[in-house]
Image (cartoon, rainbow, N blue to C red; front, side):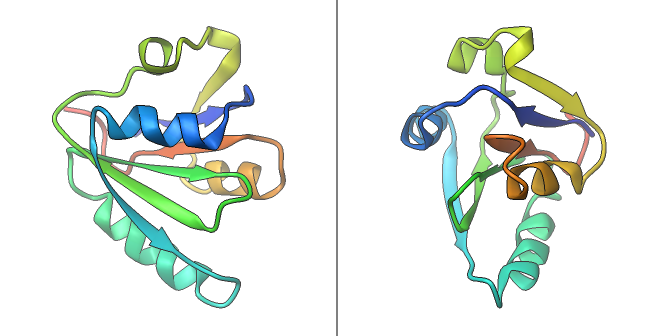
Length: 113
């Protein structure tokens, strides 16, 4: 399991629309009261091997993407090694985005096949 922290600023619309061109998307909307419950539902949905999640700064949604393609940020968004970092801690992407220290996090519950 590896999660991806996106450090480079990228327009949220571009981040979403680019991923939607390659993967099916479902979103989970939350507010301050429902965030933990919705997050648990989101993480449960991520247990399928063909899924990954996206959590972005200043957006009250979790995004679930599914498809058979592996995500490759360098190709998909033309990112360099300095634009993102890989991390194994499941909570870290959420924490860094909530603190404003990351633009977005891509979350994978299961290791890619």
